Image (cartoon, rainbow, N blue to C red; front, side, top):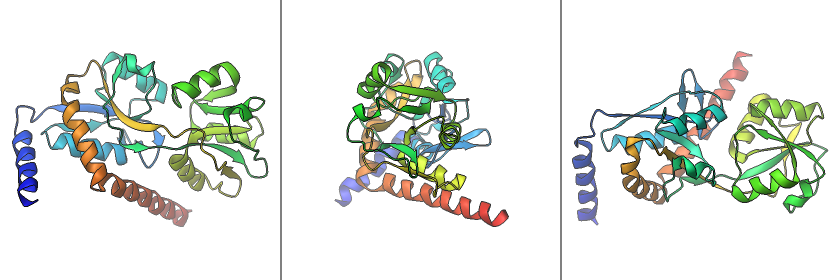
Length: 261
């Protein structure tokens, strides 16, 4: 065991002093998707940003996680090669045209249906949404199968931000909003709406979240190493600890805000 650990450390040392030292990878992500990623000043921070910095730091490559703009614009920036990597994104056929996905995702990310309290409804299958007006974020995908089903069968109004969709639901312009469980729950607490908004117990889908590389990025040759390290960091509990770290970060941030009010 000791020999194995020593060899792993030696590999990291040798790799980090390689010809890649000094290079900078440009990454970006969703502006409001805590604990995985969010906008802070002109940067994108959070679990996914730190995880990417850890892995590429081992290669001697600096990660600059910057705010590009709304989610749809961010994806266009990956298409053109303006950025090298999207910090967290689901896989679908359209995105496979311009993004290179590692084999290994960094976490499953349950997507749920948020509703107003007192206006929940039975949900066991997608068909239960057919006669209802839903909302989601422009550019969001919830997996190839659901996206195709929604396009053909559901009424889903797209907006720029989750908060905008929630406010529309409060005004009874939407009956439900589709969003990630972790991020949506955090934002409900932040908005002070935990007594007004809840989510249905059954997830809509539980897709995997990936860090995906622009096909125009010179860093795609590091994907095999990236795959291996994601596997190892999941197995040794590092990613789980990062999720806890950034959930705690948000709880502390919210307490500070409340004390200042």
